[in-house]
Amino acid sequence: MKAVLFDIDGTILTEMPLIQLFLPQVYDKLSKRFGISRDEARERFLGEIFERRDTYDWHDWNFFFRLFDLDLEYEELLRTYPHKLHVYPDTVPTLEWLRDEGYLLGVITSGPEYQRLKLKLAGLIDYFKVVVTRDDVNAIKPEPRIFLYALEGLGVEPGETMMVGDSLSQDVYGAKNVGMTAVWINRDGEAGYNMADYEIGTLYELRKILGGWE
Image (cartoon, rainbow, N blue to C red; front, side):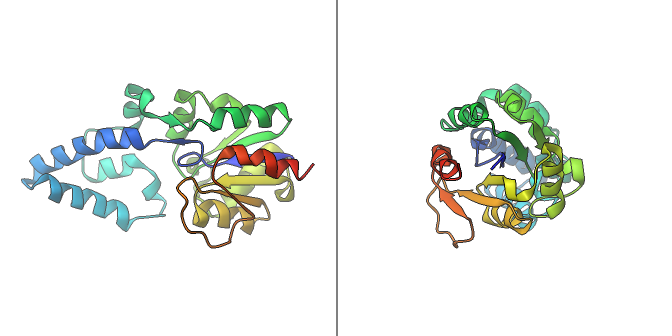
């Protein structure tokens, strides 16, 4: 194994504290504009999100801000509230260990360009030789193109690479489809479908997995 690729949200960090901060602002703005209750505004906004689940647009908060003509920009929210990005406690120690062991590290995200800003603000971007967003290839996971682009950037073959992510449909299926080893990080203990090559609860468990490959 020469390289390890990671998903971002739900894998190495969570943006949930930031989402919990701005969503009430969204509901207030929509409630006033449409003359509806905050609950109705919430249903309308989240309804649009759920309708587009796993599509290209679903991965971009700015798409939904524009859809409702809201004066919000996700990049500005990130810059204003960087402390609302929560890096999981197992992330940095694991990345440090992988780097010290000589593994090539990268990121594959279905999110837009602002995912690089997110990594920068979280203090993580320098760990990765390659960061591939949907905007680099006009594709999202599990499409093969986004995985192959990352492999090309690292100069490795699928069989030499491990993909770690929290989504079975995007990270695990997409990685296995191109011949990579797929690791499902299941932080919440959800029921799985035995699709991944490995299932872990924390990133610390990667040491044990990779130790078995040496």
